[in-house]
View 1 (cartoon, one colour):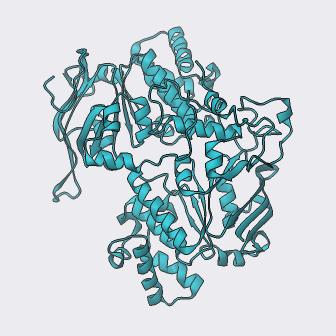
View 2 (cartoon, chains in turn orange, green):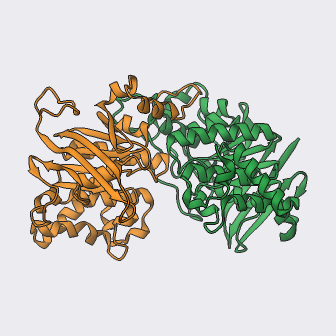
View 3 (cartoon, chains in turn orange, red):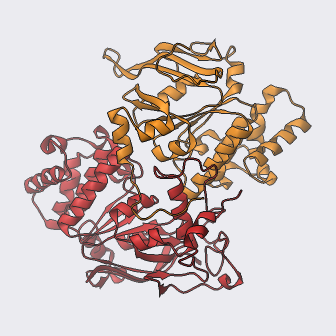
Length: 275
Length: 332
């Protein structure tokens, strides 16, 4: 890759997702000047990477995620998935892409149909795979097991679960079509610390077991530090820093990254053993 | 001398208790943190202090503000205290502010009602307060509507309303949870400074232990509507004795800028907070506690031990505390 903004791994892993010169502008008023939500973003995501995209509200990180998954059309530049153009394509041409690249949102209640039982919610994305009834049932059971929910959960409705369990259901739903990329937009922000730890453990395990490439969008510097091996910092619609997590956190180059890290509250009391 | 003293506070919905036997005091100028997961009874306790619980809930015990029990007051008397002797800041400033009123008018309203200020004087007071919460151009900002402000600015308006009448107590329920991290840092600095300047006591409810650690000299842990541990922040966070506090502490520490990044599995508290009325009899935490025994079917009393108040039959012992807090719930 010739992309200067993204560090290339030495082991020559395949490029899974790529954004080139990506931009998105909106017009606040029909005659007004366009407002740029995202400007000239270059990003190369390699197979098996866990990439954190951090920034504050309004920085453009969710806009970037929506364009990477082709839910939104860029006004400049393009997105490619394994070399194939994803931006400005018809849904028919995106069929394979829709299976392979999945997304989890902050509020699972907003992405789970409240009138469907969990079993149906998990089975729906499997239709396209053309499984028979028995295989479909077995896959649903396997998905529930993968996210550590009991098999009986398939007969219940989303509202009967807690926030953490609903997020597990939303994650299980994305795994059905055997994706290779998971984009997660603030998936643990609404959860209590202990439940958050459980969902983060689940994500770590799924990334490993399903060989997922993970794009994790978050405002939480500590969570990204734990989960991701690479971090991309977005400020006012632009990538201001992109590097290995250890390096960015230990030795931030951009002033904005430094201010983000300095603002994170830290415990003064002696730390407990954590292992 | 305490400005707020809560004694044996019990709140029930029908037959179901949601807060049980909660007692604590706030001294003048003191900052106390209230921690625990959602559903532990933190906000209910704050709402009771504000006198904002719905009529469908029954409240018993005492809530003494400047010595008088607010639970024995008429609604009219309570109205005189709310926003006057007790100020409050909630998580969502957009729902706390009136979208149809200029922010200056919303601040002015408080001093007109409680201090009897005339319109012009009240507006001027509002502009002064906006300056105190660090709005660079307060006279112009006073004329704006909530939707014209950012989340952090709205929360500063809510803080201006809370401090408008020099309250003795400020209750802040997750005041920075919805804010970006840099805005949160500014808001916490501002709150510390204003609370100190006014000599007000602060009750800060937060799920973020690092925020409480930074802001509060004392901390109270709640679970299942009960206080399970309380004491000096340094003591409680440095050497938690209750397995619940220890679990919260080790989970928080494992996801922080100072944690071990090579940790493949984060420690967590097993299970989840049961719904109201579904806590087990006896110690409410025993169904999630790795140290629970048959003894825990009886509620342990909240008693003084090791420079704190603690309600646990099997507390983490000083020497074992490091190891036990870390192994809670973690496998492999």
